[in-house]
Length: 212
Image (cartoon, one colour):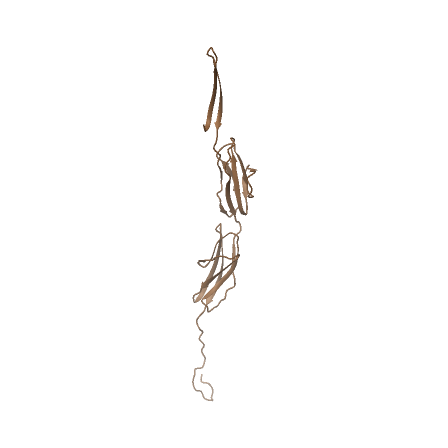
């Protein structure tokens, strides 16, 4: 049965003398379970991954290059910039092999950047197309003021509505590890026609000159 089994062999001769021998057999049909100390996810710093199994004496194998696990685990595994799939499994002393596990890590140590292209200011048009560029591979979101914008390649574009006077346009990018960077432009909307006045009122004037 599963676990420890005691085998006892006994001999008795014709005059009643008894002798025995005992052996212990452990039946183990259950595969070990291996866990990591760091869950799958997105991180802003390099990682150090430890693998531990729930049984003693197991052999753990792993890989971080997408191939089948073949490296025997002996200590922390370094995970650096970029996307890495850690594959691993354990084999116990009875030969039970765990199913291969896959854990995806994404390390992004570089903050994003964003830049709004030059705007038209002042303007008398109450809408304006805002365009710009950004640098970030792992974009979570780009917003212009309160509106989320869908990027195209490394660019973005959206139309904003303007109100009379000074308008602040703010573009913010956030990466998948939560870092944010912003750029701001100011657009002045002026739809009020200017008023021009002469320093001399209309009227009739003689040859003596203009009346002041």
